[in-house]
Image (cartoon, rainbow, N blue to C red; front, top):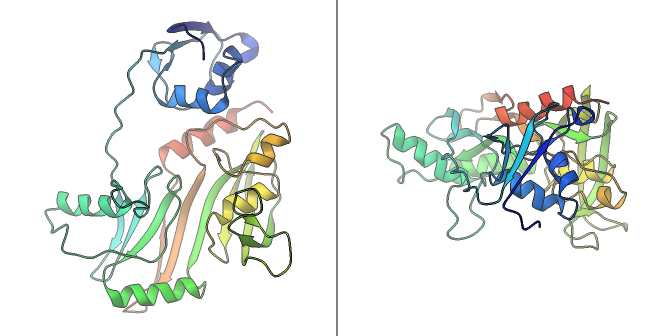
Length: 311
């Protein structure tokens, strides 16, 4: 990393539309992609005097980009969760990206379960007496719909639906390159041989995973897709899209092969994956319930920039 505490650069005409992280890395050639993204996300990079935390922010000709190593880290606003549906048996929420569905460590706070209780407190309701039972989860960096059970009866009934793959789930995602609509089927293992989850290399290994991909819009550098899960294995969408050569924009784990191929990832402030629809049979009334969630602002911002990106 450069030792200078402040550096300034002007965006040239031929750099118009360049993503902020790409521009900074072109000036800091001895700095890794991860370090450049960290500089942006921690508020060390300003554009025309304004702090920009989005690595995919597109620059315009003549703008001044400033690197201030001594700039303080921005205070993160406290996350809030939108309750999409609730009754005595279930609660469906719209989880923000960057929030774990459930605690992965004993003392981990700020999870979706914590945010539900925070929402109840703001409503003046008891926040600790009602149990929350986990029946499924989505990745920390994925936004969108998650259901929790509030009773053991609801937990058992919903868990049975997830095991039977009768729950309807679809996601919106943005993947690198021009994806083709297709069905992806493989058997997933916890370690494909290099420390990463992935598809089994030999017969008889892994658990069957089926992903249906439908292309909604081809962008200059990427594709907006709807993805429907027939099964629901850990990181299934991320793995399957990566293994066909189209990792999700914002992917940090399953992008190793893409980078080995000499390809440059599209900068993004988050994983571009959103749980957009969730449908299940109510565990008590047996009514069919379906919920939809629009993509959040940070997802839309990256998508808008990619639509404007030169081919």
